Image (tube, rainbow, N blue to C red):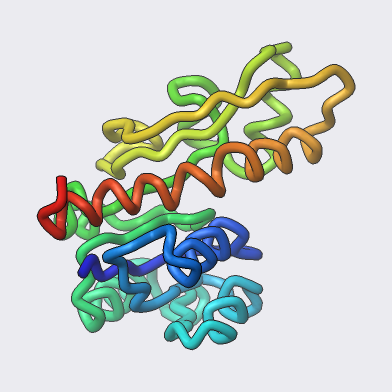
Length: 200
């Protein structure tokens, strides 16, 4: 069984996609152990509670210094003995010691086709604003392993999504979520689970 923790900052739609696929049997060999947010008001925590998944807030604002926050986050992750950490819209830079502690055990979903529109400053609607400003005809989403850089780790999966005439950042964001993110993230977790559980 692959023990998974999900880190999220906001509404948690990607988290919901994972929960739904675990509960309806499409995502197998996976145990959702904890959902951690840096934001006590994140609706993602409520989604976790509704499905009896431990929901924890570890916020930088609750600690005197960044190093203290990083230590608390690492300690919380250790408690759950996780095999995989999923960054599903987690908007806090994770500490280098976390990357070192969990090599090839952290994945992230990014709402573009990396290497386009990624790296420092590209998150949320900013990604889609940049894509539309550039006039691209295709965007999409990428699941990648997390390394010491920003959106630079090895790519696991990508899915292209058409950019349509008249798209706004909001409509493009929604289409990429529905057509790519909500499918890719569970698919990537399944691949890792199969490998972990000896099915690959």
